[in-house]
Each structure stands twice: as C-alpha cells, then as structure tokens.
Length: 315
Image (cartoon, rainbow, N blue to C red; front, side):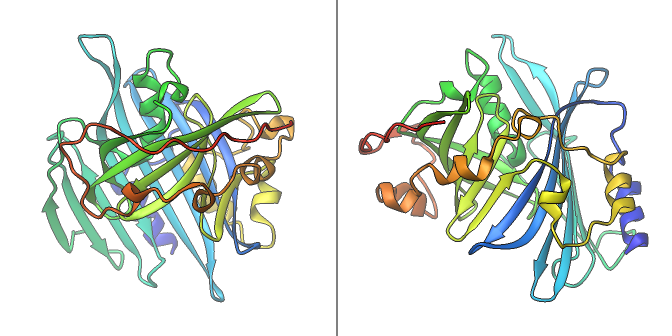
C-alpha cells in the first residue's frame, strides 16, 4: 500500500503545505445508525498560483475490511471581463483500493474542456487506458460545486441561489472521469445556533443527495436514504474505533489536519442535529426532475411546485 501511495504523490501534486487553508474538517459517516467511516476535507488557496485545492481523504468499512480513497481537485481562480469569479479546472487526482485492487485516475485539463484522463491499475507507472473527455464551456470540477455557486452570486454566497427552482449544471466527476449533467434545487433555509444552513437537493451522475451547506459554500453534511455524513468536533469523534493511519494522512495533507478551521467544530455546534432538524427529501414532495436520466440540456431553469412552509426551528 505504501508503494501505491508514493506513486499517487509522485504523479499528483503531493502535499499542499504552502497554501492558505480556508476550510478544514473531519466528518463522520453513518449508515442506518451505524458508524461505517470518516472523511477529512481541506479547502485551500495558493495566492501565488491562484490555484484552489480541495483535498479529501475517505476511509470506510465494507464488511470486515477498511478501504481508503484519496482525492485532489484543483481549479485555477480567474475573473471574467464582467467581474465574475470562476474556477477553471486544472487537475483531478483520484486513487482508491475499494475494489480490492489499487486504482488511480488522473485528469489533466491543459485543454480546458477536453481533459486527458489516464487510468492506472496495480501500482503501474504507465496508464492502462487513456481517454479524452469533452465537456461544455461552463463545466467545472464537481467538488467545487457550492464554492462556485457562492463565487458566482452577487453577494458571494450560496444564499443567492434561487429558492424552489431547479438549476442545471455540468461537471467533471472526480471519481469516474466523466462529465455528467446535474440539477440543484434549494429547498429550505434555517438559522441554527446563529448559522444559516441551506438544504439543497443535488441530482448528479445518477445519484440524489441532500446537501446541507453554509452560505460560504462550506459543507455541514449530506444525507442520502440511510446514509448521513456530518461535520464533527474533532478527529476522535470522526474516527471512532476505525483505523487512523497517521503517517498516510500526514503525508497526503502535508501535516496532520486539526479539523478546526470551520465555523462549527471549535464552537461545538452539533451538525448531526442540524441535519436531522430538516425534513427528509421524500417527506416533502416527489421531485420528478431528480429521477431524470437525461435531463433537457436546453432548459436553463424551471419552476417546480411550491413546497409547504418549513416549521420554525429553535437553536
């Protein structure tokens, strides 16, 4: 495994120790109430290169085994002639042993909307397969979705996303190397413990998630059927009784993440309770657009039925 990880670092960017950390947190993963994994996410910015990087480490239990995944999503910050901030795809690196074999995928966006995607198996230094993907002119890396929404809006936050209206988008999926169409649907907002939290339905690459997002684009957590992923106070709460390969994590991030660079963890705010306070998607209405396999790409946005008012929340 160590050899495989060193290969991943040598082909990719390696640790991002010189960049400013904008967000960092540990998340706990539960399925049907059972703790099955954790993830660490860091969002950073390098003012010299103008690169924004989302680094993700995921570890979860499958049967009696524990599998890991590393993801680096890198975009370059640019400003349009009209003054809008955009994140141009630069590089995507993904590696995992979830299938039992060591697998790595690298996408280089030198040709912006036609990245070269390479696939590596069994610690190979040469790709087993190469393909050229083609995306639309406004496509982006999927992990940047909410940060891009925040940057694009007039007030610089996700709260400018239209309420109860489906917004289509296209993004490059870091974990399969394909462009996919998606829809966002802002369902409801709440102020909890002094924080505004948005509940957003996201249909992407055939999967529907409920995302719980701060106006800045930072993620409080996600929910999907029996699975819930939520920001926690510290590493111990995220990891529980699972393994924590400290050297591996440190090498990937360049240092051992503290997980305190976010609005919730240092204040001890319970993200799990925040998410559970929102009604689940299936309780609201049948969002038919979420089941579409091939949505109408010509539709820029369309109005869905009005939801019933959310009950008032108490901090």
